[in-house]
Length: 315
Image 1 (tube, rainbow, N blue to C red):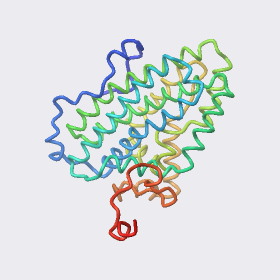
Image 2 (tube, rainbow, N blue to C red):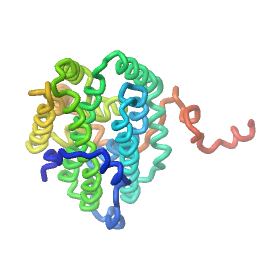
Image 3 (tube, one colour):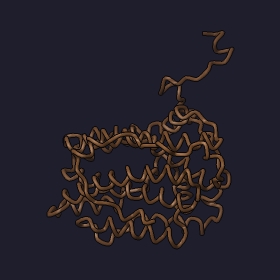
Image 4 (cartoon, helix red, strand yellow):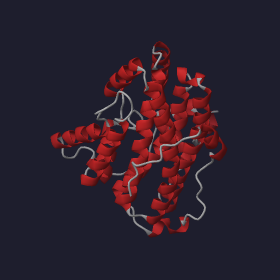
């Protein structure tokens, strides 16, 4: 199944009317544990869940930029944020049913705590850059198109790799949402870039220098490489990424651009230098996520956890 050839039509009015959490009616949840998932499958699922659950923080970055002045864009973002929430929730549910025990809210809090000062600095630099650059929205919309297309392509690759029927059912439903998200970003980017040479030049310059694969920043370079290599380090996977780049290259000013395929080739080069790179993360797949000691969750959220008897006695 080709997940790159998506429907490009989009209507914001229809989208607002139809937006809702992903429909899981009829998914055979009780069959999740009856079919095996490899360590690579599990690694990808925990990566994907964490990034889907990170969307509200990404949204907070956008709402301090020029983009927030566009009512069509903010209407889309409001619906998009809600839909992405349920993607993460349902991936987490599948993992719990598979037998991997974790508290979703604690995991989200710990992942965010690990960002520390990085998140605040990122918001400030994004805000400043957007107000200094008139055509910032063109860059944001192009990045959105790339990220949504790479996300749905990654879900398709995981369906192919895992062969898990319940996971296939769930991800196929999520992919339908991601197709609509991609259509919005792509059409909006095309509209902004058309007959706008300055926007095209800025967009190309920024993508070549600033764009990173989905999740990088929340995840380390090695984690990003592990995902890319597991999903795309074969003939079919590489072809999917080349097709992805070709589709993005049809946006005005982006002809011949290489992004996802370039990221795969860079990951391969790092493995050539260190054969254990990336694959060791899959082999040692672990679910515990603890916050950085310099950014304890208790200081950042209401999830303080249970106090020890000693702490209770001294309070």
